[in-house]
Image 1 (tube, rainbow, N blue to C red):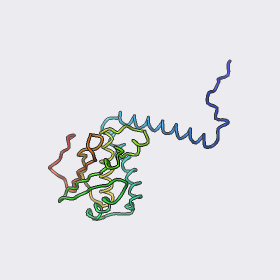
Image 2: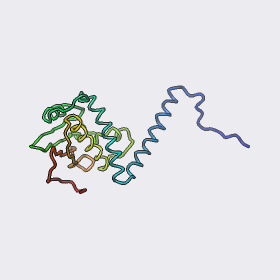
Image 3: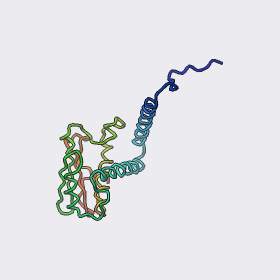
Image 4: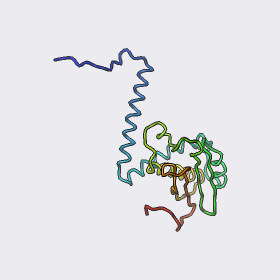
Length: 179
């Protein structure tokens, strides 16, 4: 029997080269996982996107110094979030509705999702469900209040910025189309 000829010999590779290969393969595998997520039915996909949003939000809350906040006043949160992060935000409250604009278009980089910038996923409108859950999680976690969150439009739907509408109390007025 003929011995296999390997075209990829790692025996002479440096630890840095081995780590690079491991990272590259890990990214490739994760890209496949993400592609699979978007093939799941809507209910299963929403569960995964909520978990992704939660983990991303917790990282950002740590960076924004909001990770220990609980029962924060809504107006205080809005003030802090308007000053947090790499992109400009314009968040306003009108009664029980919060209008949240993430001005990602100012940065000239399109979708702000780190997974898009790593080349792991395409910037599609479906991905915006994750960012909507991100906004919802931050508001709920820091204020202790339940909110309804909806995407109005985003850079992935053709807008210059991403716009969300959050309802602090159940609203009979909504632009949701999936109900």
